[in-house]
Image (cartoon, rainbow, N blue to C red; front, side, top):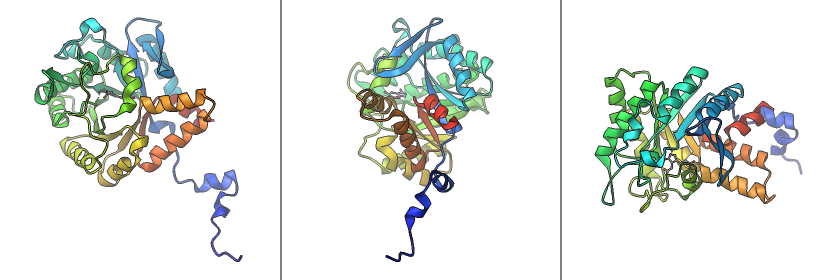
Length: 325
Ligand code: PBG
């Protein structure tokens, strides 16, 4: 054979492969989700998320410093609300002294450089485990948006850098942007969960926060996994309404959506490698069926290659350690 083009030349050694690699993951690409609980010195493993923990504020702060040292530049906060504080109005979500608000302050005090992102949705605070206010079997849109806007202002007041609404109510990005402006928080950003699908892959997360829906499912507000054009519509609308960053969620079953969105919008695109995706790798590793480090890097590189410049992942710390060598 006298071939003119031999593609294997550029794959021949680790050095040449590194030279021509098209996608390079960096620790700063990763967003570390954190689950926070009341108390001190508390660290509870989440049963369906091996080696991932709910931690009290003090241990969370230590972990944030650790992540910063590894080159991670953002954390995404979720709190586990006590059952007795849950209701159907989201009152506790607005408590200036609530667990979320105290966590934001503690983290910003200890590690001011870290970009603190906060989850905005009512499910951790809802007696029904739904992302909005419930009336009968309906998840009410407009009344929920009002609370979400107040909740966002409360997070900004506590020091949050970026508000991350994960609820999929209509019109919430505009309402949140306007509320932030009215209260003088013009430097607080919004990362919109724009194309968030109703997904079975959130199962372990709902164990982590004890926030599974008490009735029905989330299909009247989260997207149908059959749809692609709708994801483009949702993200374009969120950008128009003021989203600084848009998100596709979950990640690995939606790589086509990530690419489509990346080709469509002019803002950073993030993807959420969700709890079920983490759990699947963990389970296969436990069975001896996958090499964990390789599975982490291949998954996250694939998500970045698809078009996500930012990736929220429960493997943030491990991945950063692998990148740092
Ligand atoms: C709640 C929320 C969910 C996740 C992030 N924010 C769960 C849901 O919508 O039911 C999922 C994260 C994960 O599975 O890792 N609004």
